[in-house]
Length: 146
Image (cartoon, rainbow, N blue to C red; front, side):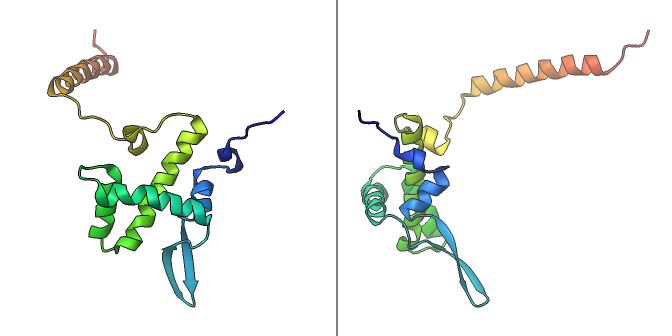
């Protein structure tokens, strides 16, 4: 009888998995100088696989996607391309970890926590509901004088 084990059970949380892939930011110390750098450790083949998945999303995708936006933010902040790619790969590894752990398909909106913008009518309805709730709360807070 073979028992199938989920690979994510080996890791306590996603940070450990991302560190296993080699895309976890570590601290490098040299005498009195501290600087953050991406780890050179990790599973070499898994690290390569994530890079090969992320590179086309960043460089060859004609449309916009969150990974490309992250890469552009990092390069705009002064990181060279080889310094920005580990951040993209780490985000991808984190998202894939969650998909494997919870056995759910990959969803970009869920992965990046993006919510579609609400319509103007929805915002107005919410404002009216909140105003009504505040009136009720104020009525309970202010004692009526007899």
